Image (cartoon, rainbow, N blue to C red; front, side, top):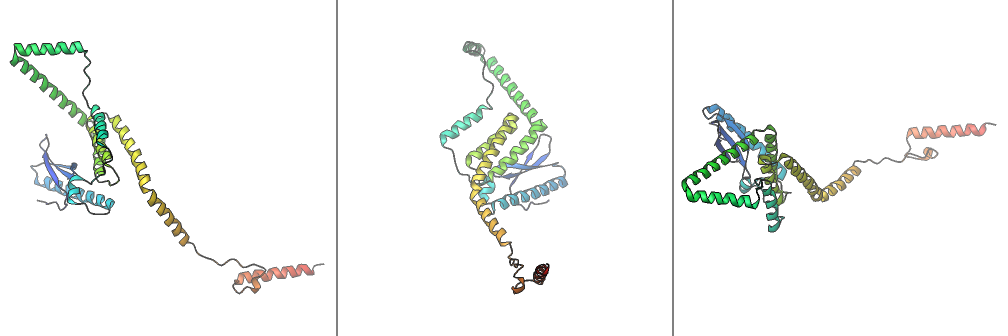
Length: 280
């Protein structure tokens, strides 16, 4: 059986259809899934080779961008990102994001809610076993409905593409040294949106991130870009070549650096002038 030579860890899971899946784990998240039939040794070997090729390419891409090797800790957790939000701001932002996934509000008025609570309490007094079973039936039905809702979401081709995009963005964020910790939490939030939330909200927040990131890169790269501009001007100047000034045509005959062509032109001009002087 093929043994991967890449140093990235991987996990093997079982899908509902019976197939197994090799998933690359990098920075604490799963990526690069490779499915195979566990009953077919050749299929598993092919999946392991595919994982290995993917993992080697992924690691090289990240390390080329960083300009150094990843540490073992970074392979498992991602880079260290500078914290840029105080605890109060983090709590506020988290509450705002969680609110996007909160269940619909109870539209009943206070009297209706109290009446329903009173009826439920009376039923538990009269028939504890029956009330318990009814509550469990409702709970299990709600759980099944939620599972079906999530399955329907996951089956959407458009959502699958958005999830793939959000997953790649989260992985890139984990190994981007220019990003602060708040943007890593933002990538987590967008991945949750991609899987469970409103895709239009995802698109809006993704583009807001790109705008922030562009501004951040502009600011961080300004000194470097200025340096490159200076060096570019120096390089351009170094590529120029000096040429002797063109000889004064009237003085070419006496100029030791004049070319034969310049001397010939000077002689022709003098001859022309002499002919003109002799013309009555």
